[in-house]
Every structure is written in structure tokens, then in C-alpha cells.
Length: 376
Image 1 (tube, one colour):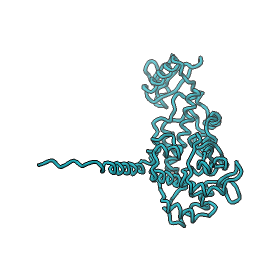
Image 2: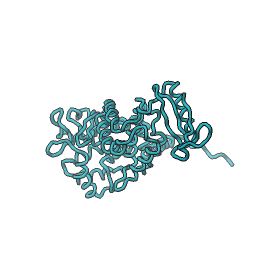
Image 3: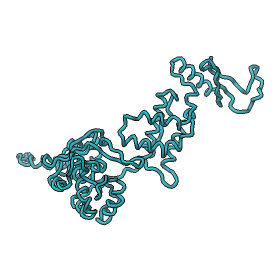
Image 4: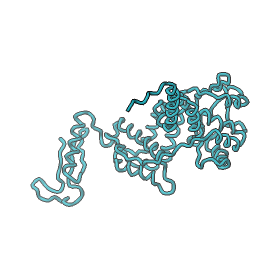
């Protein structure tokens, strides 16, 4: 039967040889026929422990202490092996975060010893690391992977409760999107290596992500229908190219302007040929393209400092909205999960569209007779 023992006093209330040494109160319970003990500083803590043990043993949710006495490094590979449902790119990114960040910090720690305060300290360490602190979004992603691992440990009956509860994540300053005008896109396309001019126009008019455009094949383009099927994307993880479905997990169809269809005509080859590649025909890598071609062209064209390649996707959205596209149409073009997400990202742009709607309605209402002023 579970009980609480006073280590500093004997049954007759005289002081024991342990008086004043270590923690005073000891929780004692039976587990698998063997007596288990754990010491606490206060009697309330010891009582709470034996109460929890008794409740969990009665309800069948009790977890043996030794189940959590295992190093995190031994469990991480077992957890990673359960992630076959993830997209190849997401799985590769998860493995990279495990090896680069999670395992070096937590690998030698025993699972059962990790407390909520330890996780909170780790999160703050990542965001304030000496030399190169991680961005808030990166911290959020890595923490999310560790939280998933801990939830798996709970499901495997290694621990009763995940320590990843009530963790405060760093608040990042959300970067403002940059929207280019058609004239600015033209300057960028004219300044960059001519081999990549079509790519600049393509990204700025279709809204494809760079990884989606880099994996686009001739078979995905229909010049006659002026449509592009976005069925794959490529990313770099652990130093290798990983091809998988688009970020949404679903293929989508994107319209082509006549302007863009004319530029793509000469780029299409065999069915599986890449539409956009290096001059030697190799697959594009985002970091190489950005460093060697995109960033120098942005500077030379006098465009806003810090312009991302991804801002061309935002530019495509802004041009579509300015042309009168609905929220639903922009959502489908960009492959967002919902129209609500599209509106959340580009709410400011749609505000102007609402103003245009009001102006058009005023044009209709102007034909109606105006009410006469009443006599005073």
C-alpha cells in the first residue's frame, strides 16, 4: 500500500540518523511486486505523488518509472521511423532538425528527467544563442518537432505527461511582404542573367513557389489551354534534392497569361524535360540561384533591399488582385488551404478591391434620381 514516510524522525518522534540530511519525506509504493521509493522536500509533495500513483494504478494508466529512464538519443530514431506519412521534403527537414539541433541538446538526457522548465529554457536558448540566434519561425518549427516527439513518448507509455505544455515561444517581428510593380519586375528581368529572365516573369505572374517552378516539366505546361499543372516541388535537405508534392499536398492548375505563354514556347522540350534549369541543364537550387544571380540583380536594378525570391509570389498575388481576381481565384492560383488564409495574408490588397466595388456601385447609383430637398 502506498504511504508517506518521515525520514528525519522515528515512529516515537525521536530524531533519526538522517535528521537534517537530504529530503525529509519519502513516498513509498509497490510496483510489479517490488517496493519503490522517491524522496520529496515537503509532505504535501510526497502525498500528492502517492495519490497519483494510487489513482493511475487503479485506472490502468500507471507508467513504470524505468520506462522513462532511457536516453532521448535512443528514442529519437524510433520516433523518426514512424513519420512515413510526411512528405519527403518535410521528413528530410525533420531529420535535419533532429540531427542538427534536437539530438545535440537533448540526446544525453533521460526522458523522465525532462521538465517543462527545461523545455522553456531550451526554447529561449535557441532564440538568444550566442553568435547566431534562430528566427522566431525557426524556433517554432523545431520546438514543434520536439513536441511531437514528446507526444509520441506519451502515446508509447514512456512518460505520463508531456513537458511541452504551456511553453512560451518567442514573438517574431512579422516581415512585411514586398509587392513589385510590373515596371519593377521588368527591371529585374532585364538586369538578371538573360537565361533566368523568363523565370522572373514566370514567378511574378503565376505565383508558383521557387521549388515548384524548379521542378516544372514540359508535360505540365499546356500552351494551347494556357494552363500549368503544379504537381511537384523540390527542396534541399541534408545536402540533397528532395522531390515531393506541393506544400499543400495537392496538385493545382494555374493560368498562364498570353505574355508568359509566348515566352515559354521556346523552353518546352521532351515531356520530362525541366522548363527552368541552369545553362548546363542541371536542376536549379534555390540557394545557388539566390546568391549567384537573384541578389546581385536586385541590387543592380535598384529594387528594395532584402527582396526575397518569394516576394515574386506575393507580387503575382498583388497583380492578380489588382486585375480584379476574387479571393477564391487567388486562393486556387496560390494553392492555399482556404480562402480565409488568402484573405488573412493579403487583406490589405483586398481592401482596395472593396473600395473599387464601392466606386463601381456608385457609378450605377448615379443613374438614379436624387431625392429633392424637403422644404424648410
